[in-house]
Image (cartoon, rainbow, N blue to C red; front, side, top):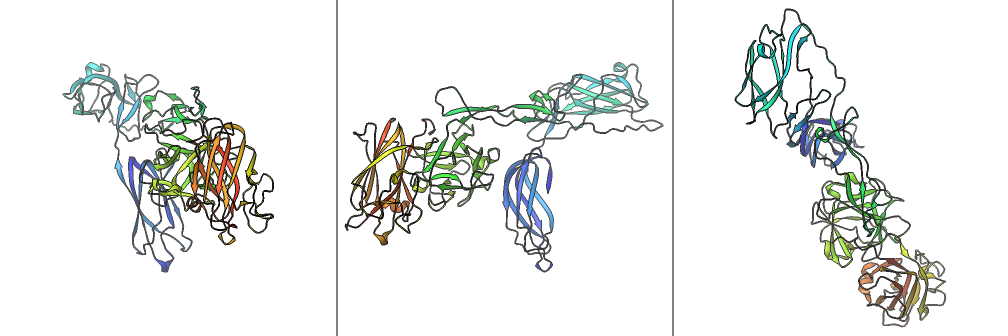
Length: 601
């Protein structure tokens, strides 16, 4: 059901009255969703109410807190399956009205200008007359413009203005300010009207204005009927086209670009008019956009944020996936142009943006894909630095909340809103280049895998074939590669480049003496002889990242690796204490650093 408000209002609450009577099968709705619109065509979801548990047969109220500027309010109501009917008896919409008054200018022969003064909108009904004398049916009228009308009043004698027209009784006089006066309500008053003259004055203005008027005899021995019908309900609004693709701005960085759209002030008749006719500020035709695409990795596990389904869809969720490749889960930041570095996260393939499902941000609240023009304030994010190249996302609308893994950043888990953003690794993210993993040409291990002769052997490129361990029921299906001694693994890349992360797969099964390693360090090199500073993870880091099989752990290398690295060295030591203690590795993936400039802070 749709409600037309009397004018534009900042709506703050919608209260639904309903009846409840289990004996008669009457119960409140399952839920009610509230939407807001300024034009009746585009609707924004505001909030959802679900507490309709009242049982009073006469009246129950369910108040839904909302936040939106609306001319129209739409309620979407879901019927409860356990009831035969629901009965609504009153809907109350609370908020702050924005009244508007009319401003206009002297008309041309083919058009006139009218504007609502204030934030609200009003319907305008109008009649146009030539500034002349004449007859409407059999009754005389005169129309004209009078300049210099002020608050002290100005007397107009009909005989001087209209020598050919005589009014036989006190006429009807209609007047309006015809100049684009200062902001605020300015009205025409007529303190004196007779058959021979009229006095015009202004209320609400201290300056003189031009007034348009019509004087109509309006009475006679026989009646005259004016039968009018609406030919066109004329209104004006900006017609805004869709955004173009993000284009290179030509500045050479190829990280940030621009996108454009068409903006026209149009009337209901489809014609284009000056912006003076359209209410509100002219929408922007150009805006900054992120030209480069990135994958978003968990800094802890190396798992990537991807669509839960085969592709991002409206109201679809996000999950953590093992790989950052194939174009699924590519992201761009869409600046809000608020001047504070805030942005929306946009799925590159679908063009949808990540935003809160609810209009309010709350602990445990879900995030979904939605059209970017509906993401609104609830989807705006701020990027906060955790360490160099590592960030977490805070809500701009409510800065005590951030995006965090729902459980852990792995195994297909999703994301949600939470607090305590910068004290937990599962909240921390890293950008990697949208080109996907860097290709590994070959690798060597020293010593070769020695955890078994049938199980845990390298079956040929096992550590870099893109296949992750999924089962552990036979030596053929269990593809982890194992050592009982310390080992060094050296990976040569096909092409040199700036390395951002190295993601290491590993398997743990304590009853089989397959433990998380004691320590693993990763370094990089351009020439294969001189290696960088090491990035280390200890056994506790591995245990936190995952304790079963098919685990991943990420090593952030962006701070120690240069721009042209071609070699990666991994050094690992097993759990000490027994010669049969094993450490098992599954897959090694190397990701390229994103273009400089992706991190805005």
